[in-house]
Image 1 (spheres, helix red, strand yellow):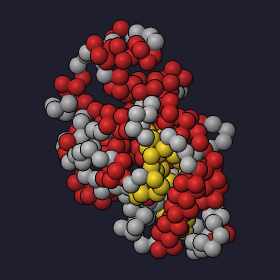
Image 2 (tube, rainbow, N blue to C red):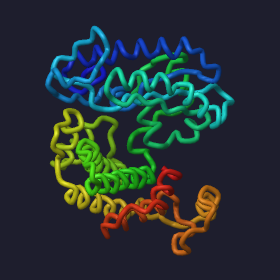
Image 3 (tube, rainbow, N blue to C red):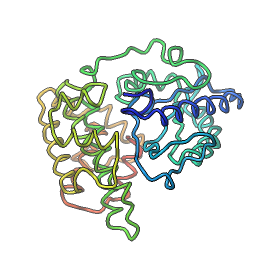
Length: 333
C-alpha cells in the first residue's frame, strides 16, 4: 500500500499530500469558532484509496503543477470535522455549512467529491462501537487543528472481532439500498454507468464484510478481509475498488443473489438471533423519529433490521423503491 492510494502511484500520493496541506491551510485560516480539528478518513485516510487509469486528456484534476500521468483519484476524499467539547448536533451542522465552500472548491479542482462530515465529540463517543467510527480511529490523517490523537482521546480502539452484530445488518441495509438505487438508475432515461458499477461493487464488498462481522472474522484492511473470506467474487471486488474499470465485477442480478445469501447467513447466525428480538426502546426510537407506529408486525423490532427487511422485500420482489422506505433509510442510516 502507498501512503494514500492502494498500490504504487507516487503521482497521486503526492497529489493527495499537497492537497491536504492546502486544504488544511484554508480551513485553519477560516478560524471557525466551533471547530476543534479536521482529519482525513475513508479509503485515502487508510492508504487504500482507488486509482482510475485513464487517458491524459481525460484527467479531471485541475491543480496547477500536479501532473498525474495516466491516472486519477477515483474515490471521495472523506474529511471528518470534529467540533469542540460541549457542542451540539446543531453546532455540527453549522460547522458543516461553513466548510461547504471548501468542499465545492476542491471538488472542482480534484474532479472527485470532497466531503466534510461534521461530528461532535459526544456523537463520536456515543457511536464508538460503530464500524464507521472504529475504521476512522484505526486509519486517519491529521489535516487541521487538533490532532486525531487529541480528538479521539479516550475512545478505545476495538478489535475487529468485537464489532457488534448490528453493524453487519447496517452494512446490508446500506448496500441493499445502493442496489435499489442502482436499479432505478438502470431503468431511467439517463443511465449513470459509473454510479451503477460502484454500487454493484460496494454491494459485493458489503455482503462479504457483513458475513465477516457476523462471524467475528472482520479485519481492518481490505486485503486481509479478502484472505479471511476466501471468496473469489469478493477478491475481484477488492481489486476493482483499488483499480476501478468501466466494467463492473458482475451484473445486477448476480450482486442481488450475493446480497440475499449474505442476508440469510447473517440473520441465521446463532450469535445474532438475540439482537432480533423486540424492545420498548426500539419501539420508542421508531415512534420518536418516524412519528408513527408503523406496521404492527414490525413494532418493537430493531430499527435498522426493520429497514433492512423493507429493503430485502423490495429487492426480492423487484419492486420500485418506495419514497417511504428511502426516508426510513435516511433517518436510521
